[in-house]
Length: 161
Image (cartoon, rainbow, N blue to C red; front, side):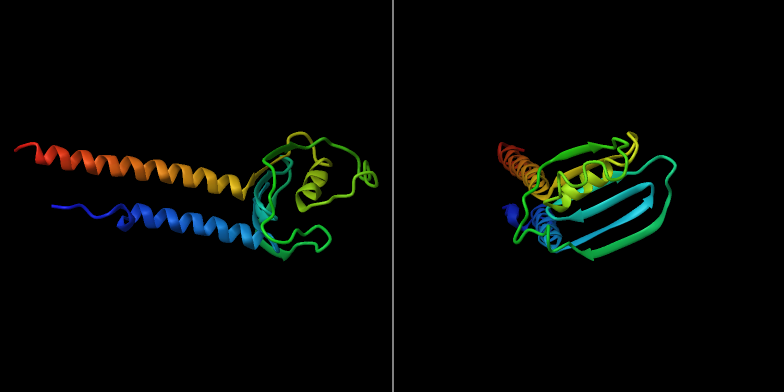
């Protein structure tokens, strides 16, 4: 009995779907900012990255979602390439460092706004390209493992019995 080819497995289709979804989210983030708030946490998809932010411990936000256009002054055409970053609050006063470093990207704007928060606040940026590499690498490894398992099963069944 001949096994089904790997490209017909549910694992193959799932990997294509997940990678396609991340590529769509990356494309969507080039023009729109979207996300949601739950208590002091915010998850967002904007300008080439997925971000997770934890506000100050005493801050509470209602469960809400948001979706808005990015600022045309900082928007990048095409698929924006961003860096992986982890930022903490610095409790800087309002207006500190306002004129010297005008934000060039949405990521820079968020980093600047977080500096006003206390040190307990943090934000992590995970670029879409890094998510695609991680998912594609894991997916390829699992597909190779599944292919090897199928081949070993075929060899074992033809050895005798």
